[in-house]
Image: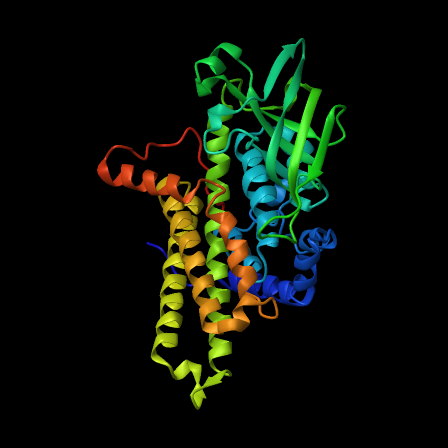
Length: 400
């Protein structure tokens, strides 16, 4: 049975994150967005609150909270701006939770502990200039030379690419399997920014998430030791899919925050703006939009909460997480669009936050599996064409 009541710890965490976001980010986000400025001090603040390792066990430097706590943090952060949730997605969801589940004890001590403490920032490198949803279309490679691997390749559309210290790098370690598009020829490595042959850059001119750092990184004959391989050789694809499942969970909970923010902004505006001699909140069609936002928020919140419950129990949750991601991101786009309509002409200008919500939410429909990919996945599950089999590995159940 799912207990929908938040614990005292959950409520205290929500309050802490909400106060942080409202105090340290909300007053500046319009300026940061306009200037496409990533503010590094936000990382230090998040680390000081133990947010970057919120669901990592204390023995590995984290706060020791459960996976529902991770969702709560993401919802609260994205209710102010998406760039903060993106930090949680790539650093905690895609990278740290992957190391926690797949890493060796040595890797956990060397990389996971400082990441959970926020002493080192991490991200995830899967997407390439010519390979997004088509993961096996990647061109990055690694060749074995003694006790080292020589890595080459370029990753694109990487959050925190020009900020992170540690990277998960997915590439082909078997050339014959690459030609056959056999995903068992892919492997995963931990790469450090300071390694010779590593370079990165920032992408400018994005539609949304302008306060976040998004870019690319390139590896040219970067040598990494064998002990930096995550999992076994040939397990890279499985590890990448595992990581994406955790990322989808953070995206789903974060997108729910956009819905809530759109609703709240619309309610506030509808209670003050007057037309035809009355507040616009008294107009039936405005009420309809706000009612739909409320329903979309509640449904999306329950969907990601269910996925979080399954993660806490160590149960398969690929289907639940996919559904939550698909629905929350789709409904966030709808909510942000309706919020602009509620605001009328004012919603089209950045004097109000709703236009930023719409620009930001578009990215979530693309990354961590496009809306179309998740639509097909859910249809295949419903039709019996796809079975939710026990995963090679699932998140370790939350230790109460």
